[in-house]
Image (cartoon, rainbow, N blue to C red; front, side, top):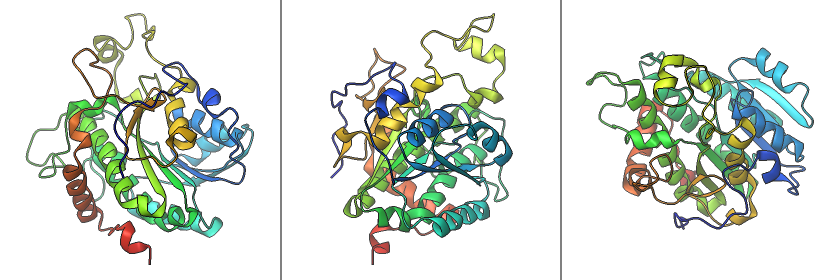
Length: 325
């Protein structure tokens, strides 16, 4: 049963860090997969989970860079190549994980691109939808037998307050009929992430697999690499001298909600909710324009239609209920 979309009264909040959230949590023997866990909040997510005893595999497009970043961290961390825009790379990554582990206890779909100029993958799919949503859809499908085998697994899908910019257009997901808008494309992809978590939780609950969407907050990371300084100043993210808005979180704070969703005892037996600031988010409202969850990503019918469209676009049939046999 999908959990009500209302705050739980978590002891953590806006300025909590990933390390604080995981303090006292023992993840010894747990197997965790993190995509993009070598940049921005992904790095701090891996640091916190590995530091709590988890064995972490990081999927990385730039494996050399990942090895450099993660090599000095405490804990057991492995890096494997993964390009979420390449279906063959996704399959190879999942096969390699399966060759090493018999289960995955936590899957964190963290990697993303944001507001880039129009590019397409080899299939002709728009890159933000293809990378942020379809790549993770296929990856989760390929790792499903390992998630199912865990008995009580969690999947954390990184969404964003950017979901407020628009619901996925299932009739034109690749901007073939309409002019491309980089922010609308990002918003649609982040809405797709939240809707995927909603439907995955519905299908995964009978297997003990629960899914959560997460808005990490505003953080200055390499995710902004496609934006000019002028754009960021205009949006209020920094001033003309490059000083970051004081409302932005640090990367340690930005990773906290991901880690909370992956490990919090408060979420035992729960799932399918959109989380922010280390709690289940409240509905969006006029007085909270940069927070809360908008109704379109709580639409179960839209989530089911997106699932069907994702199967069509990836060629991956992903029906967890049927896969249980």
